Every structure is written in C-alpha cells, then in structure tokens.
Image (cartoon, helix red, strand yellow):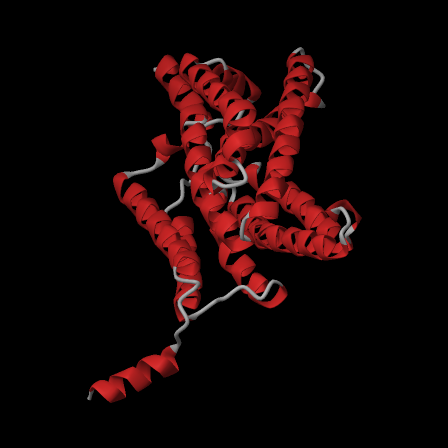
Amino acid sequence: MGTAAAAAAAAGEGARSPSPAAVSLGLGVAVVSSLVNGSTFVLQKKGIVRAKRRGTSYLTDIVWWAGTIAMAVGQIGNFLAYTAVPTVLVTPLGALGVPFGSILASYLLKEKLNILGKLGCLLSCAGSVVLIIHSPKSESVTTQAELEEKLTNPVFVGYLCIVLLMLLLLIFWIAPAHGPTNIMVYISICSLLGSFTVPSTKGIGLAAQDIFHNNPSSQRALCLCLVLLAVLGCSIIVQFRYINKALECFDSSVFGAIYYVVFTTLVLLASAILFREWSNVGLVDFLGMACGFTTVSVGIVLIQVFKEFNFNLGEMNKSNVKTD
C-alpha cells in the first residue's frame, strides 16, 4: 500500500496541474507576445525598405531597430509563458500574430488585405480560442531530474542529430544557392532551430527553480541552465540572421504566415518527443486541438494565398444583380 501511494504521489507530481492564476497569466503573456511578434516582421521589413531607398544599411534605420526590440520583447514574453503553461498551448497561440501582422502590413507596407484576408483573420482568432479550450491541463515535466532524463532520452537525442544534419545541409549547401529564390529554405532553417529554442526556453525555466536552493542538485541545475542558455543564444542569433535574409527577398506577410505553420509544426514535434505533453491529452481534446490548428492554418492560407485577388462585398453584390 505504501509503495502504491508513493507511486501515485510521484505520478501526481509528474503531471502536476498549474494553478488557475498561473495559467491565466501565462495565457495573457502568450497572447500579448504573439501580437508583439506579429509586428516584428512588418517593422523590420519597413526598415529594410526605407534603408534600400536611402542606399544605406538597414542597421542604421530606426524602424528596423524598433522591430528588433519588439522581437526581443516578444521572445522574453514567450520565455515567461513557457514556464507557466504547456508548450503545445503557447506555440499555436502565435497564430494571433499573423492576422495582426497582416493588418499592420496593409497600413505600413501597403500590402493588400481583402475580404478573404479579413475572414482569414477571424478564422485564425477562432482557431486560437479552440486551441486554448482543448489545451493540456497539466505539465508532464516539472523538475530538473525529469528534465535531465528527458534530454538524454535516445529518441530525443536521435531527433536532435537529424535536425543538426538538416541544418548543416541547409546552411552550408542549399541556402547559398537557392535561399534568395526559394522562401522555404530560410523558413526551414528558422523553423528547425525552433527545435532548440523552445525546449531550451522551457528547460531554463525548470532548471532555474533549483539554482538558488542550497542542495547538491543546485550546481547541476546551474550547469544545465548555462548549457541551455548557450544553445538558446546560438539558435536565436542564427534565426535572427536568416529571418532578415528572408525579409530582404520576400513579402513579410507571406514569410510570417508560412513560417508560423512550419515553425509550429516542428516545435510541437520536438516538444512531443521531449516533454510528452500530449500524453495528458484525451481523444476529444486531441481532436479539438487538431481542428483548432487546422482552422488557424486555413485562416492563414486565406490571408496570404488570395491577397492578390481584387474584390470586395460590393463587387460581389453587383455581380449577383447582373446575373439576376
């Protein structure tokens, strides 16, 4: 009986549910961060365009720096959100930044946003609400010991090796030849790096909990935190470089939309392998999250694929009248 009780207690700790206040705070920070992140590509693109007109480097443009600072603020917000709520909830909420960025781009960059684009914005927001409703209600990794065990899991190590090989191939062979003409090259590099940034961010939050405790594990926690910080820093620097390369060559809204879908898919895959957060999701919630993510993706497609179509409700009504 005592052994069974201890096992039950350990299981309860391993899938501990965050407090309602922590979940509400995490959700609020995640939503604000997604909106801030949605503005970064637009501001950076605006800065790049302004710099090209003047014939100077975008590093001298104040609007580009505003976008860069917004990106830093958004990443800090994501860091705080990842420590409060499951990764499978925070990452898909980045969809809110896509419609916000599209609306902002229509004003700052004069990019088109027709009735289908506005419908796509609505669908993206609705899909995000569905994701929130059906998100996991508990954390599968809550201690440093569990984190170390997950990081050394052969499946996760094998996944990271595959990601590293793909990154080396993309960065040193494919990007120099095809990067400026194929948007998927730069997006793939930035999204694959998400396999390191998001788990590292969440891992730092877990390891930091034990750093200031006077026990033998505090030194291990400090070493783990420093390693994860180094990985996170390198990943962010490389992502930052290739995001700006992409913005120099491609439309900011198209880049932001495709980047969201690919980045979210790869981050959820990495988180599923490392943190096993999906193990706490029932069939109904899994289907609900799948429907929510599909709704968000359809909304993003409507925003971007049909952005060049010049029609509105008034023109549709006129065409119906002529048919009658």
